Amino acid sequence: SIGYSLQCIFTCAKCQISLVQSGNGIIKPTDALILVCKVDGYQITSGYWWSWIRQPTGKGLEWLGLIKSDGNTEYNSNFQSRISITRDTSKNEYSLHLKNMKTDDSAMYYCARGTVTETTG
Image 1 (cartoon, rainbow, N blue to C red):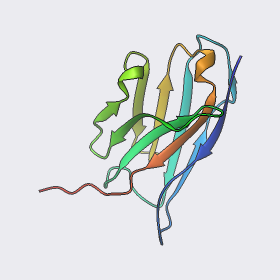
Image 2: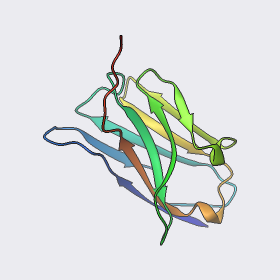
Image 3: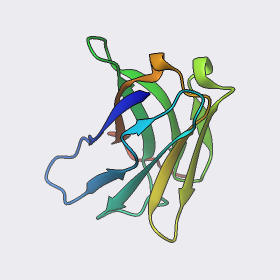
């Protein structure tokens, strides 16, 4: 089985934004990992980039991918073939889907908000 822990992380000074993750803690190899990050206090369509990162035990942080406020996504090329990040704007949440899990995928997974908002024009 593959173990992973759920945490939320965000950078925000003097604001009332919270990110809360949910998902199962243990899955079997080859299963898909699905994590959901619920955002309160800020509309995910209003700005910022919303990321997923992870940290295997004893190793550094690894960026997995992100979804932008316009719905466009960017992924770490190491996971391109098995990662998908989607969002549900009606629930103001975004999700990580990572298929064909391996024992190497055991890690602490984080949802995170970028520190700089997007601007248009």
